[in-house]
Each structure stands twice: as structure tokens, then as C-alpha cells.
Image 1 (cartoon, helix red, strand yellow):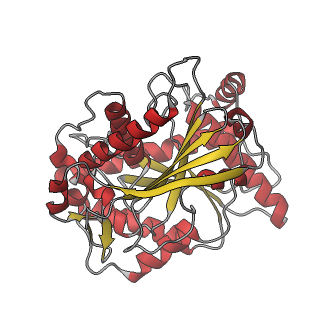
Image 2 (tube, rainbow, N blue to C red; image 1 turned 90 degrees about the vertical axis):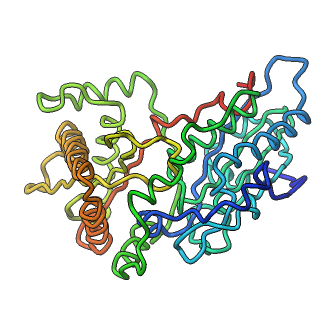
Image 3 (cartoon, rainbow, N blue to C red; image 1 turned 180 degrees about the vertical axis):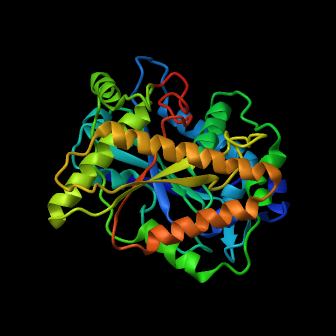
Length: 384
């Protein structure tokens, strides 16, 4: 893939009054996340429209991005002392690039590492917390006039819900609609519910660093069509789980075969642990809005340890274990309704620290973006 960078700049909030906003405090969950970027790439082919104008689209994208940053102003700042975000005048890196070739051919590539060239910064590696922007964006224009919008979002303050809600606001402004968020005072609901810790226990920090970024990362793509998903849902269905979701069915399948691969590699069985990231915004009462910024998700943990190593791993059993772990997590959320957030976050931190310190088990992390608002038609109106 041949790419030529045509421009680089910093995009800042539309209104300079934003620069005077008070510091935006991290939540205790944000503090424990090692700063690193997570990618997302949205692709749009050129429509059958003679009025399609790439230059106008690029201008509109940048202007609407500035308006969206007005709403999500902490994303324009920098993290200070792992305690709060300030310096909202710093902005986010915004890159435009020309790509030789056709978008459709790029999407069909099997060597996914080539997609890294479409990203504005390197992902899945530790970056300095105090100097790194919260997000970077690269707009890639192909010879066919197809467009790939690439995001690198810092997991320090952005989980999947934060990313998708920001994109939804950007999309609305870009289409000329109202992208303003309701109740903007709820942006910092996470840090008010889980205030930052000062100091942070060192055992939590070391364990989270190991859990997040230790080891090598590789990306592989496996496509499951509608028929395959339906088959998996049928296979994992049981009396204890009569109506499995798509995520539960696919998660059980991936967990099983990752466990079998580990067994084959090491020649023996280890206890197998599945951790699932659960967004607790919609679970709480009253629920938190999606535009509440931060890592507002917890860990649901399932353990499989067969007493008979040679026995086949049953998909329906894994699906039930995974679903039950989420149900237990939701029950724990009820603790928050009486204001005892300290116990909840301590339990979560201790759980993560225990998992991160274990070498006698295989740990698999599973995250679903199924219910996020990221979709193919959000940014470019009329472009699919």
C-alpha cells in the first residue's frame, strides 16, 4: 500500500471559550489504564453521484470535527499527573493522506498489518501519558475517491462507548444536524462516581500494566456469516441458556478454540479464564448517559477448569458460564445504588490485580462492540 501524507495539523474546539474550562478529573478506573491507542477504521466507497466533491467533504469533515470537540472538550486536552485533563487548546492531530489504489481492494487484503499505514499513530503500545493527545484522526483518500476515516483513540479516557458517542456527535454536525449532547454536565459523571485516587496503590498499577500491554499483539480477521452465527446460537442453546445472544455464541466458540490451541501448544491443560468487558452505563439506576467520558466498564470473569483434560469442551457450558458471569456483575452493580462505590471499585481492582498476577492459567479477554453506535453511514451523508 502506497500512501502520501498531504497535510498535518491540530484541530481544536470551535470555541476558544472551551480553553478556559476547569480541569476534567479522571475516574479511578481511568487512572489504572496504561495510556495506549486503540484503532477503528470506517470505510466509504464513492456513491453514484456526479455531485460528489472530495474537497468539499474534507472541509466539512474538519469543520464539523471542531464542533464535536466543543461538546467533548476533554478529548482536546492532555492528561496531567494521571489525575486530570487540562490544556484544552492543544487539540488533536488531524492528518489527510492520498492512497494509491482502490478502497475495495484494500478492504479485501488478508495482511491486516498493512492497515497500520492508514492510522495516524501506532496502536497497542504504551505512550507517554502527559504529552500524548487523547485521539488522532487520519482521512485517507483513495484513487477511486473512496475514503477511509481512521481513528486512534487513547484508552486512557476513551472506551468503546465514548468513541462511538463522539463519532455520532461528529456525524450529526457533519450532516448539518444538531450534534450537541444533552445534559453536558454529565460528561464527568464517571469521575464524580469514582473519584481519582491519590496516591494509587502500586500493586494495582503493576497488575494493570501486565494485564493491558504485556506480550505481543497480532490482528486476525475471521468472518462469520449469518448462517454460521445461527448455527452457533443453536449449538450453545441449553435449558440454562435458552436464548443465547450472538455475542454469547461467538464468545463461547472463540473461548473453546483458544483453550484448545493453548492445550495443544503446551501439551497439557491449564485453568482457562475469560474476562468480558461490561459497560455499566445502562445497568446503573439511574443509568449514566453514553456521553459520560471514561472507562466506565467493569470485568466479568468466567473460569473453566475441566477435571478430565481429554474431555471435549462443551460450547453450551462455556456460553452459560460467560452469561452467568455477566449476571453476577450486574448484581454487583446494585451495590452502587446505596452509594458504596468504594467497595465496588476495590473488588474490581483486586480482581484485576489477581488475574494480572497469575501465571498458572490462560487468560482470554473478550470485548464486543456490537451495541455501539459506530456504523458505515455515520460520517459521510449519502456515502456508503
